[in-house]
Image 1 (spheres, helix red, strand yellow):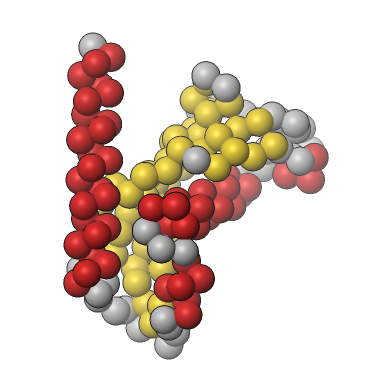
Image 2 (image 1 turned 135 degrees about the vertical axis):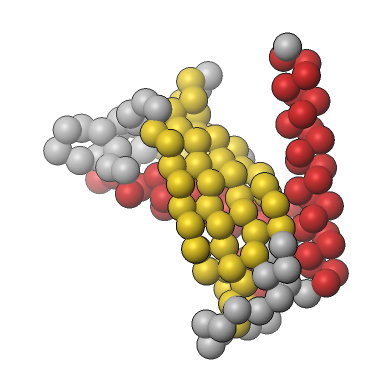
Amino acid sequence: MLVHRVPFFETDAMGIVHHANYVRWLELARVAWMDEHDRPYREWVADGFHFATTRVEVDYRRAAVFDDRVSVATWLDWVAGASLAMAYEIDRGDERIATARTEHALVGSDGRPRRLPAERRAGLAALAAGTARQREARRAKAK
């Protein structure tokens, strides 16, 4: 989980965090997630791969402001042959301020799509399945 203290420069003329900064937080959280759960992103790059962002969705619920401490929970939503999706919950304390989802295509250094190596795809698929089971168990317990 990424924890971030909002600096003044991320705010706009209204004193709230500019919406574009949420996308930056998603990127930071995704790279941190990969470091912790898969393999460091720099290793993907060293092997000649990048995860190009193909889609970003953010549902803004509440405004963040200067000096807020926000946390970005991240998980792998799904994985396919050459792509994957990450999901995010952005909270300020106990308050959910945004939810988001990003989709990424694996590309080579030349920018052309590449299939995820079979062993990496299997490992990522197992992570996605485990996360789905954990989320379902939490939902069932909350009911």
